[in-house]
Image 1 (tube, rainbow, N blue to C red):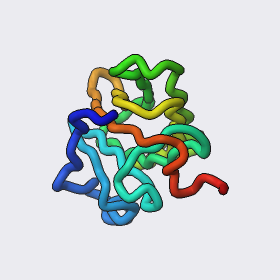
Image 2 (cartoon, rainbow, N blue to C red; image 1 turned 90 degrees about the vertical axis):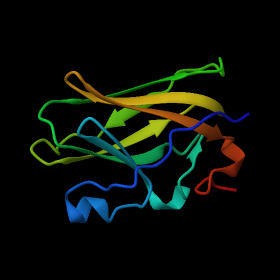
Image 3 (tube, rainbow, N blue to C red; image 1 turned 60 degrees about the vertical axis):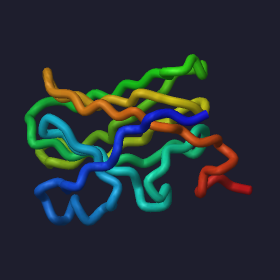
Length: 130
């Protein structure tokens, strides 16, 4: 299954240390999301959860939500790591339960970054134990 995934941004977060985390950044409305380097710009279903670094130019709490766009079933779960208040970046882990087309959004206040991701099967996850 594949879908029309959101393309990566040509821009990077304004903080050079955060920007160096990955080349795979999404951006909208002052919110950035970057996939960890081992994923090579791909989203994967199943364990282990994906590491996604967020950067925001806004003040407020980051909220992450997601839903299947093709009725893949299951609920996306996301955890935002505590202890990063006052920093522009925010690490998270996102567990997508099934492959397919998923909408993942991060929001701060009324601003939102919406990502449509073509999530690959768990068997292809590069960090999955054999």
